[in-house]
Amino acid sequence: MKNVKKVIAVMALSAFAGSGLYAGNAESLAKEAMKLDVKKVCDVKANGLDKVLAVAEKYNPAAVKLGVEFKRLGITNSVYIKGLKEAVKKKEKKVTLKYKKKGKVKSKTFPTDYATWRACTFAVRALQLHEEGKKTWRLAVPGDGYKF
Amino acid sequence: MRRVMSRVSVMAVVAVSILGAGNFNAQAEKDRKALEVYMLKKFENPLKNRNAYFPYATDDELKNNIQPVKKVEDFRLGSYAFNKGGLEQYNELNEMPPYEDAIDEGEELYNKKFKNGKSLKSCFPNPEIAGDYPKFDDKKGEVVTITSAINDCLVANGEKPWNMKKGKIAKVEAYFASKSKEAGKKVNIQINSKAAAEAYERGKKEYYTQRGYLQLSCANCHVQGAGQRVRKEYLSPLIGHTTHFPVYRLKWQGLGTLERRLGGCEKNQGEKPHKPNSKWDKELLYFMAYMSNGLPVDGPDIRK
Image (cartoon, rainbow over all chains, first blue to last red; front, side, top):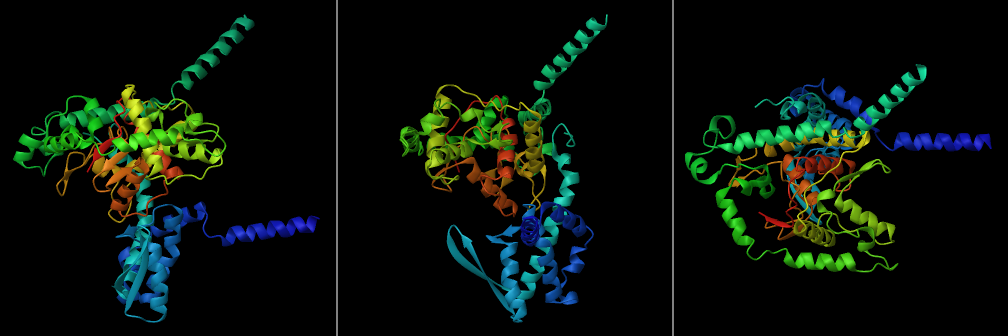
């Protein structure tokens, strides 16, 4: 019986670990992202597409977990990354992203290097903004940090 | 002497706990009053306040379109409190309000029997409740909005929940708002526990935090930016934001809930919107509604 319990506990723990990020982990990635120079780490010419996309893949799940993922013109950063994985692997010059808008499937095509730069900057900046916000939000509150 | 001392200390503990119990909204009241002072100062004389608050406005706008606002209650009209041209258009639209049928349909849905013989009326015997939500439910430990409360009622009675942004739920809310307005109800958001005060604080923090790729906070547009123009539209002030929902928006060509509008704002900020039933959405609405405490319920209404 004890062994069965142990097996169940190990299975539950592995399922939890495999289920992706938990909030504490996302917060620590956000702190880590603060140390990055977004212009340097997301420079496609200097680092190459693979490395820049890897940065996006590393940090964007934390942005999703923290509820701060960027979205532009109907396309979330997760959609950028998903589409780019295939395009970068196949070394395609252009990437077509499919996304849903008001229940309809739509698509947009971008140059791969441009979309990779965007995915990377969106992932890193979302987390940096999350961290910066912890210090700056009070500056806008009338009666608190905002003087008028 | 010891007995007297112990009685005194017991009484002191009771007094502190009673005083403390009524004091959970102290910070929220301070915030609300400071916001009122700010908005009234900003709009007391827009022409005179040009340098401080309206640097991009033209002379013509400040003299002829951006009107002074003297009373906090006027902010229930949103940007029409100060936007003279907009108010004229709004009044014209309100001559034949496009939401009237929705109120009647909402009343029907309110009385319609579920499969188990109960109805929304069983959950909400008094429909004049639009000003009382969002509430903090201490048993659940979370904020309950009028939208989530309607869906909770449906689910508890074996029905499927409705879309939280539009459709049936907006119609029932239109009925609630209409009955509340007729009865002269005011926004009356309560913060009665430490957990409720913490939920309010989280909502406030999110309201003032910059987000999305445009790095905008809600306050950028609706506190500091209220009264400024985005293209040809004037940005509405935070005070009064929740008083008139659900609204019939010309852009939507239909009625929508506060949750629907909130999702639109998040998209405009450049962020993936949170789900309408998320803790994030509900706590943000709790804060926003508190900022309109004391204002008359004024929904349903029309907005561009």
